Length: 562
Image (cartoon, rainbow, N blue to C red):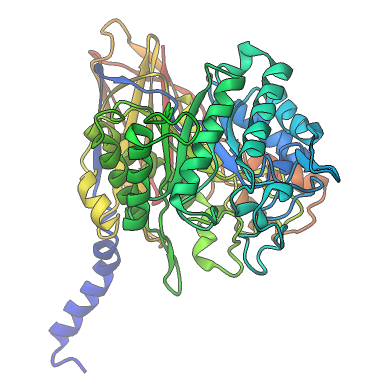
């Protein structure tokens, strides 16, 4: 009970104002300033790397379709990394599983090599125009020190079965890696394979490797030597360990780098091992809050920050290219949202805005530590024979592109020459690494230029996926060529109602068997869409100002050309 009518009125006003206060005052206008004549260096497409567990989905119909779309994201070819290229099996796929049967043995224990499935995978890569980041793994059944059980049945039981164990014969393993590399070189030719990347195993600091760290270093030395014997100019790297935000993972990465620097090589007996790039896997940590998802971007960025610091601490390696071999909001692409509600972010615009935010902050951290960032792998592809929009971490569902793929389309429109872009609502990187984006939203921009235009990507990100008022954006582009008086504006948008097949699917009643007409509508909704029709805008004394609304988790790409 309120003691007075005056207090009751005041309390009512507080309730009216509370949503705006809690959501970080989204109603306040945000000013973004892009300076065309303030270059900030090159903007390489380090985002154009993708990966997945199930290599046999590569040549499935929707897999081929998606690879073609990935190739179309950028003028530069994408890199693709997949698990299970040497795993024993009949080539059938299931969640977190794949196989090629590349290596078996006859009754006398002699090697039998079979490249049919390997060729089918790599032929599809070549037809799509993408480049392999060749992951050498996992252990064939005939070489495993603990072969049974071999094939797992995810999500039932452990996935870490016979394929995860060390080799019982490192000479046979090395010969397999040599023959594998030689076969790919012979089939596709030096002109193509010289630009491929080669890395050893996956996450050897956890149960993906059932041996000791020293046994992994031995595997690395034998594998790297075998690759280089077959392809002397190959770029070989690793260890693709887990996120070094955890002390154990950080120690593993340090020990591996030390081994490659001064440790005794298990093959040559000399000190050190070849290392052309360094890779590790930063992951975020979303949680379900009972009524909404709260993303955990701080965990991912902290792992990146710690990993960069470790690399920079080694004089020999501080300029070595770094590839974030899996850089994602969390760690299980094949865990759907049905039993893991924190994964429901994957279908809508939140995954898209998170991707832009994480990528931008990764660039900032790399610049701060002066890291030679070569690639950021998004571990997401597609899953065959699964329900529509089941909440897997994927770029497309049953051939329908998700909003996150449109975020990559936006990144692909950006040019190669970055220019200065500032925002009045951009949070400090250290704050986001420490606590995420919780109290205030983070609204920022990346801008690039060409001789005849400027491209600007703006997003409105918050860890909490809650309803919120849109934010008014005032965008000023200055220092444009003074002779330009008019320019063509194209404004693309990702939000709940644009470039969003998930929303369109729900509006159709969430059909699990859409008819032909419904599917065509969903395909159209899945593409990157304009917010409004292209229009010509005035440029006055080298400057233009634009105003628009940007909802929470929304992304706008503005392309201005003359």
